[in-house]
Length: 173
Length: 173
DNA sequence: CATTAATGGAACATCAGTGTTCCATTAGGT
DNA sequence: ACCTAATGGAACACTGATGTTCCATTAATG
Image 1 (tube, rainbow over the protein chains, first blue to last red):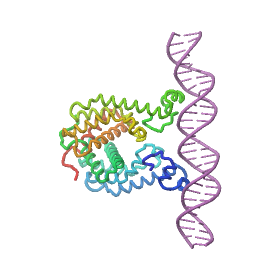
Image 2: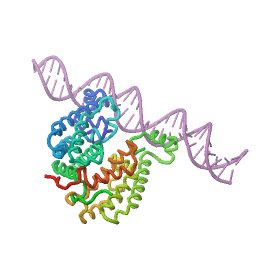
Image 3: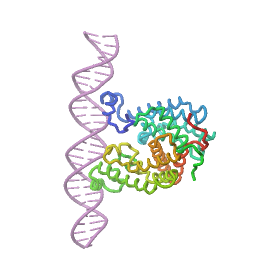
Image 4: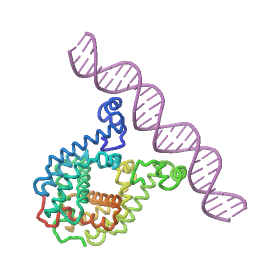
């Protein structure tokens, strides 16, 4: 719910959850409390999903494919956490939610070192592209009601090869 | 300003513009009036920039590169218009702001027909990837203060070839 | 069945953002 | 220098979201 609209009213949230607004306040002291709880929960869910992908094992390309699958699976949490930059704004250095960034960057660097990923761009850029395509794919699936595995395939395909047909003569000037 | 935060206070906006809140109300009847004006302005600016790119001419690949350059140049407007889906929500069928979608889709279809772009994904998907990478690149440039031409190159590179090194044996299973 | 805890509706004060009015000040044009 | 229009500050009412209290109702437990 908060992923779809970070500024959703507490009444709307309670409504969507099928409980009364009073009950919501009984479980979460105030709005920030609820947001914090949602953030914790999302980070935990994403962390678990990424951990399950075991991206430190196998070839970088296969690991990246598993990672994309894992990320799409928790797309709603990703949209919530990173869709609106204001969600994580207040917690800059305090509770860095990036135990998930680290293994991903490690994978990217490993892939670059092994010659699988483009070594001429920064690992951070690849990470952002990854996130960006997963986000786009997830949104697409949500909007059109497409099945997840199709989206995962498309995201992986584009992530790996871009939008060109796969002949190698087109290179940047 | 509205691009960075769609829910910015009118006082903040007036402040950022260096005028008083009263003056703001004198020029724009109400908040929706200001938003509408900003939307109109952004659409016009994007439209002009995209028109200048002349994406109906030249090879699809070159045209796409010019399009990316043009889009990054008006990145702030794009972030405002499409960053928060609620901006364009109220104006669904009324004032379709997609005179810019059409030429882009035309270019994509032309590129697919001429064998330049991946024919196995939908034009809409390519369009969303394009937008997504431009958005990501622009945000990156804003955050790190990078020069625009560098970002443009990186976006084009990733858009065309993905994150793989450019050998064609890695294909989806 | 009786007791207890949880629920959710209603009502309330509070606060922030908005839109308006009024007026003193200032910038621009003659 | 003078007149006019634009500006922006202060104050106000209004609205919607929030957080709180109180109480009737319901579900769960013995």
